Image 1 (cartoon, helix red, strand yellow):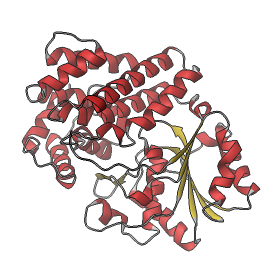
Image 2: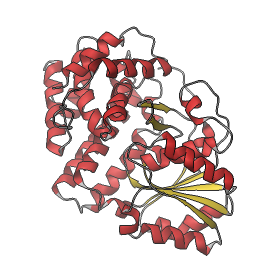
Image 3: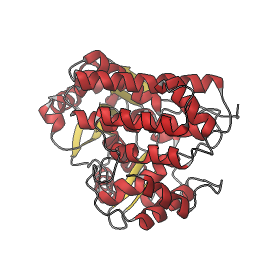
Length: 385
């Protein structure tokens, strides 16, 4: 096992009606002026918008709204939120939505404390402080409700960069009520599952040796994600399956699943970010295209770990890495997430541009193995059918 340090400060409130029972008091503990960050109209349709407003007003909290966060949150919109936070002297951010909303809220929180947020994401400026964030999760996938990391897209340069964040950018409290996930469309649920699988699988595959405790954790979480999403596909109103899926998403990327692994570089995410950043598709949709191609390209390098994943998670025994890749592709097809360019609506992918951007991100994240040159990345993109 490798040495590691681990700290997760997020308080989780999970279950039925937790928002109605505790949001207002949780926010008031951090101030009297709140920036209410959310996406489009889904939280208004579900009634969650009114619940949040009522909770904040019950504690006499001043509310400034920042709506319109996109699925791939943009630098421009985050900068508008930073300006609001500074101008209105915001004390606390209330992030209501999925990973995109919570991600942008972290960018706003760090930017409002004086950091040039894009310079930070480019590795050119440090971040030390962040406004306190309270999150209400409506779309499980990224575990942004239980980590400090976030991703933004610079729409001018078409660059999509992410960072692990700082201890101060972890939400202070996160509310998870599975009932607010019941209306998530099946395609969005599939994309979420794809993201969770990638979070769990990338370091598991690329580590140099077995780590008993974390291997078993990751394999168990992978099976939980897959079993839950297959139940949801069959019955979208299965609240128990939704609850398991929601909690699995948080546990998939709260930091536990990479402890004691070597070579934790998140290669699949770095290879995917250019796809969703340039072509504006769902991140999870891009990952279900990238992960099988990544496994295929490195099948000789990661043979032992791929076969272990195939045997212990997918039930593929005494086979070749290609059989494991085929089984994973079958799973993605079963839940309805794309595995090819045309399925994702991308007619002519620019392999060279994608490889250039992917390499840039891998370098920023500290990849030094020599396995991921632009030539390699271009060939991985070409393996996507």
